[in-house]
Structures are given as C-alpha cells and as structure tokens.
Image 1: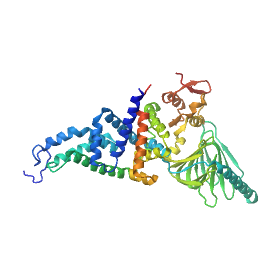
Image 2: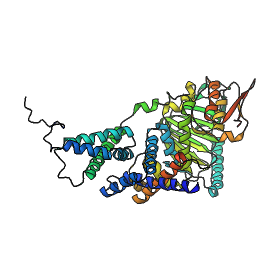
Image 3: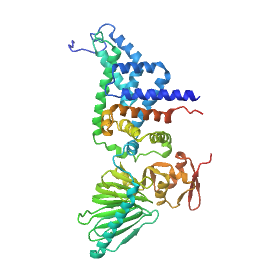
Image 4: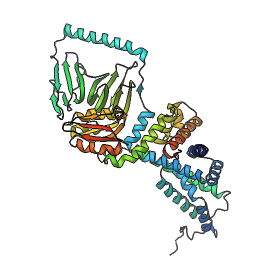
Length: 326
Length: 183
C-alpha cells in the first residue's frame, strides 16, 4: 500500500517537472520528444499530467478576488513583521510622542472638547463634524472625536466607520484604531475594528498608515487598496479591495475575505437582533470568504452548516453555533 | 471563374497524400498536442482552438517533404502560436476591466461554492505547508501568470531555481488535491 502511494507521488513529481519545462518560452524539440514518450509510457503519467493541467486552469479561472487572496498571502507587496525587541522601544516612543501632543494641547490648545459618538445594534448612523467631514458610523460602533487647533483626531474604539474627510493640510486628520494609525492625505476611507484586528480600505485619494507594533514605519495606501492588521501575527497585509466592496456595509452587505469566523460573527452581531455565539472556540478559527446581507442574517446562518462542519441551535434571544455531531 | 490566388486547403496544389499525412499526424499527436497547449495556456478550450489552427496551417502548406521531423514541426508551430496567443492575452488583461468589480454582487449562495471552496482551501493549505519561497514562486508564476524570467528577477533567483520551486509546489498541491487516500 505504502509503496503504491510513494510511486504515485513520484509520478506526480515527474509530471510537475515536465509541466514546468513545457512552460518555458521555447522548449527544445528533444525535451518535447522525451516528454511525449514519457506520456505514452504509463497511463498514470498522462493522468497525472492532465490533473496538473486541470489544477493550473482552475487556478486561472478562479475569481479575481480569490486569486488576489493567494497573491496577497503568498506574494504580498508590502508586509511589516513585528520585531519584538523593538516593540517596547516603539511603545516608549509612542508614549513620549503622545505626552508631547498632550502637552502641546494643554499649553496652546483650545480645541473642541472631546465628542463621543456611538450607534446601537442594527443601526447605522451618519455624523457631520464641524469642519464638514462626514462619518458614516456602522452599527454597534463607537468613536471619539478630538479636534485640536493643529490636528483633528478620531479614536475608533469599536466597530466600523467610513470617513469622507475635508482635507486640510494645516490640520491633519488622524484616525487611531487599535495598533493602526491612519492619516488622511485627501481622502475617503473605511476603517473596521474588531477587537485588535483592524482593516483600512481607501475609496478615494490616499492615506498614510502606520502601526505602533511595527518597527519600520509606515506605508501609503491609495484608492482600491486595503491594509489589514492581524494582531496574532503583528503583520500588516496590503491587498486590493474595490471601493464599493469596502463600503458595501452601507448597503446592508458585510464583505469578508478570508477572515476567521470569530471575527465575522463579531461583525454580524453588530447587526443581529439575536446575538450569535460560538459554543466551540475552534469554530472561530474557520476561515470565511463571502458576503453577509445584514437584512437577512437568519438566512446566512441557515446556510452555514452547508459550508462549515457546524450546527445551528436557535433560542428565544440568541443563536448558538456548535461543532456538527458526527 | 479562375481565381489565381485560390489556395483552399482541400484542393491546394499539394503533394498527393498531403492531407492524409496531416491527418495521420493529427491522429497520432492530437492528445499530447492539446495537453501541451493546455499546459502553456491554462485553458483546455483555448488549447483545442490553437491545435485546430495548427492543423489548418499544416493543411494549407503545399507539402512536408522538406521537413525533417513533422512531429517537431508540429510542436514548433504550436509553441509559436501559443506565444502569440499569450502575448495577445496579456495585452487584453492590461486593459481596464469593468466587470471584475461586479462579480461580488452576483456571488452565489455559499452552498454552491462549497466544493470549490474546499478545493481552494486545499491549495491554500498545501501552499502554507511549503517554504515561503516555494509558494511565492508558484503563485507569481501560475496565479499571476508571470514568466520564469520575470519571477527570477523579482525573487533574485536563477530561472532554474524558480522552475524547481514551481514544480515542487505543484507536486505538493497535486498531492493535497488529487492523491488517492491511502488507509
């Protein structure tokens, strides 16, 4: 049994070797002749080669977003790795910077007092700030606006918000969300914060994103790009996200691309009359890609057992997802 | 009506037996020719189309006496046509592509995706099991469609090493997606 498996693997390795050679710009006549006789020698050869062809074709006809997902994970354009030895130093720098800022505020500042905004479960909310900046606040979200003379600062404590900023170079507009800081460079952008996980997507113009846990600096995002901070890895990942997908939540669509189910549930719960709970923390690790219509959360929950090994139990005021019984 | 430029393949002034010779070549090599083209083009349908084009061109020739190895000639033609085809496709994909943004709106129900998602997960898992360089080379070449030379430049590796990584990753994905379960 084991022998047979080993030879199957060998066949696959040979087939893969031929497959890559045949994709050179101009494989030699000799290579092609040897390949052709290899194909004829054993039917398993031809079968394995056809399967590789099918795999290659299937990777190429997949949707743009799925292919982008693979590119983002395995061939990312920009990543920051958390470097632990530096983390403390950076934190210290940050504390100093903040002290400096507070100091300046107390000495010269006479800005607007801090304003707190929050929205209820299932209720989006529109906010207009004194400078004309618009914030669309997602359901069950909260933020604090502090407008100083030299700087406009937003602290997103939880949830999601879409900012359409009136740009003012002399008075930067900065959003802090967990470990990420987003600075407006003439912009509309969306920020979603789920616990310490933060996602920033730009729909117009550009923003500058920096991370308090990454030692080396900052990056600029432009319209159509998204940066995601994953607290488990301490990495910021940059990917593409079409503008209308980033703000799809404003039209009752929550969009997720390869996110842990626990994060998806946390966001769905911002819109759910009956909170969804995960009975088994392992379920939270399952990765989900797809769209949840917030006007039909029940329908989405009903479809989950088709995709994931879980079962749904509905109670009067909440829903429990647990591992499917075998 | 005499048409001086009349070179329709069927009754071209070809050597007698030319069409038969082409037909024999077709029978003998058609399967591998399509496999070869599919490997280069990532599309079975396109591969069949180009294979067809190869035969039409062969039939239109006056004869193959001057050709040492008709088989090698067949593959050389297929290689050239596939290179042209890829170039055209690259130009097309560089043009702005509106419908891409639309496809999320037509997202089917999750259950219709279940199988495809499972296979997709298998590839993802397979790639995660590999060294970063190996999966990177694979994704750049197969998913993004860059040729070996471009990947080599980007990764600062030799083309031979890039081919090695791609082939290694491919075999590993095959194992996760197709290998018979041994129990």
